[in-house]
Length: 114
Image (cartoon, rainbow, N blue to C red; front, side, top):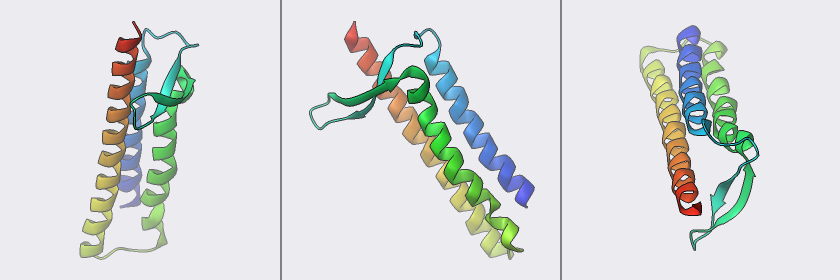
């Protein structure tokens, strides 16, 4: 069960990394991208391209891998295992959704920059 949980967590991280890689193509390395927006829709702060696109995959790794390794603590009953994998899947999908939103907002900001 632990191997499958680790595989699942790493699959989510791989999807996030692929999303970042695809978004970074064609952008110069020195480009500074928005990381957070204010209520007025303007960026509050920016980060270099590589930092901006690796931020979410790194945070996801720091949450998904420890969650996947919880099954090392002991055997899970079938009901517990279903909840455990449900939580892991919801977490992974939430990270993908948050990253997709950030990338969409960055694309919109870049298109408005000219």
